[in-house]
Image (cartoon, rainbow, N blue to C red; front, side, top):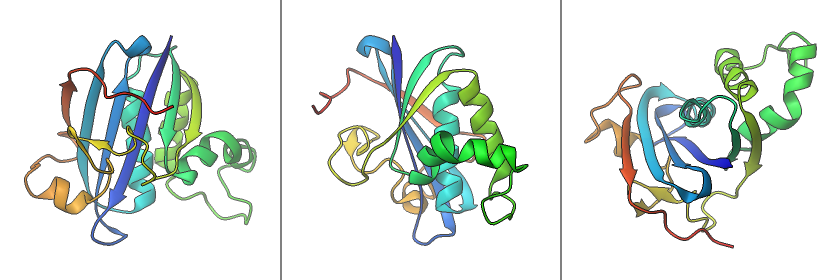
Length: 173
């Protein structure tokens, strides 16, 4: 029984700039789909992508198997390729510089360690129904962060929005 998390974050209209995150969470065996999103405030695309992955994993029970889909190579490679080197070097990258966004990475690693996470890269803006799913209508879930979240949303980093959506759309083969 595997949970599926699609996580996306973005800044708009510029990077850095106003940023937001979005998550589509699918319970095991298609038992339910929920949509979660929030406004971060000023940030970078990297911060927004990491925040989306963190928020997605927070919503999955500890110990669960999770497929974490992201269109961010930064998130996927950080979880699957770069982590061991960063930890071995005291959170320094291959150039010997401190890893950016260490606090977010450490939070993400702790959440991943408490679950069985398999990170998966999905090409952004390529028609994947869940990567494009956002608030019940097709649109990249992190796109337009400034416009989508700072105006009508009125939330903040401590006030994410959540809704349960009846039945998931069919998953592409």
